[in-house]
Image 1 (cartoon, rainbow, N blue to C red):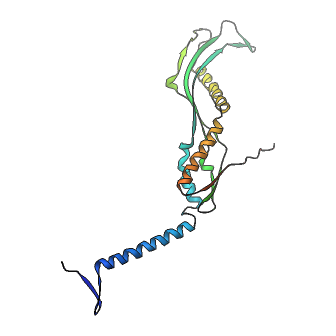
Image 2 (cartoon, rainbow, N blue to C red):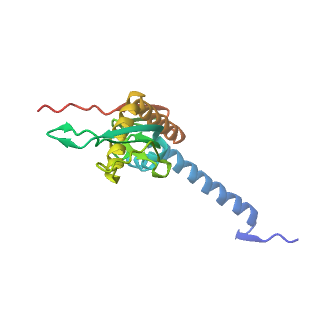
Length: 211
């Protein structure tokens, strides 16, 4: 097999394989230099870039408390703010539901200090959703009083009150603390994958308003 050659001057030849190797080496060297320069400027990540990545993590950082509860409802017709005898209505209602809490990732502030150092400020967690699964609702011991019949509004009122009970219970069980912890774990995992070593995550300082 004949070797194809490029003649530069009499007595000097550069083969195609040699030329290919030379060009490949030069290209790789340029890529390495570009990569090194990028790393020296912060690993290729600035605060805006990190924030864009963070914004996709909202759902991963939510905490959910599931509930199965029973509501006892009883009411009377009123006259001069007094219960009228024989007008009571009542029922028991069983349900499944949940309370969901988390940190609003759109309000997170990111400050990239160097290629390995980053500071993140997160807001206080809040209740994001309180849901009663309507398909799970079962009604027991329901009264049938012609003087004061049960209405759909009575069920809605009972469920609305119960949502406040669910939220209060979730807070007492530490849902806010769990949401903050989950947000920090999620952020730390992402930032570690991005190459940051010193990751400082603090909670936003809220100054109470003075009336």
